[in-house]
Picture 1 (cartoon, one colour):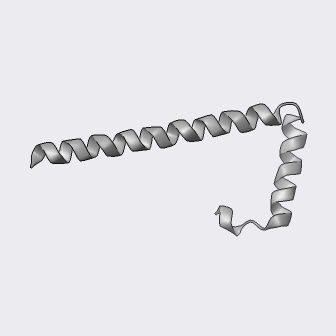
Picture 2 (tube, one colour; picture 1 turned 135 degrees about the horizontal axis):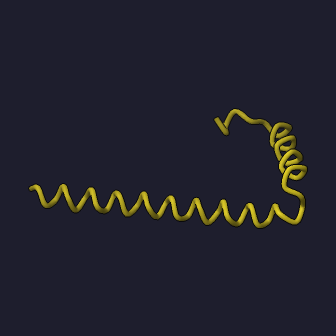
Length: 59
């Protein structure tokens, strides 16, 4: 879905975010989104590791 957005649409989204959250809150919002993404990827990797361990135990 994100690939369907062109440059102009990203600008409109950025302006709306600026209006909703204010300039001072955007860095905090971006930081928290980055941390959430990092934790999500970490959880996925741990889940894959657990799956590999359980499949090797069955063999």
